[in-house]
Image (cartoon, rainbow over the protein chains, first blue to last red):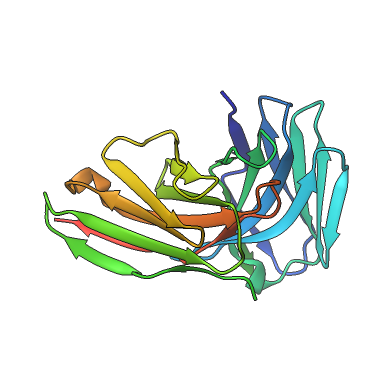
Length: 113
Length: 112
């Protein structure tokens, strides 16, 4: 059974820092991996989707990498801002389309002004 | 703008009541999902559906059922609500090919 782990569970940084969030998964036979953001009491917003054949994806100040063979993904946030404060979750999709995502428990990020 | 709409944001129900949580998506997605999210337990899959009238159990289907009569609508049913079903429920959808998954805003259910 796929298991997804995110480290650290919580992170507090001053504004402007570059930071890395980590995600690991136990079964490398994945179809894709997604990173999400969740604000308190809200649903999840998709940030980046990486297909299993890709190594990385970028969107603005966000860059996500995928090393499928080692079962790892990282989310890099450049020049962090207070508005980046949220919980970040990664999730893996183990089968094309029909299977649902398996989620990590998230990293709660606080960016101090 | 893509949209997954959960009709009820906050509900309070009594133990034993039948509860319906409705979800509608406007993206013509084949896949629809119901998750629940609890502190310390993360998101857990209850049921998902990849076509009208098709459903598959997720990790925690006990005490729940689902209905998908139309492609855009996926309903979660608590046949007899219990206090351990107090949680945040999240609906989501995606294409059959497994692209980006989109979530609704969530439904907070309290069972008293």
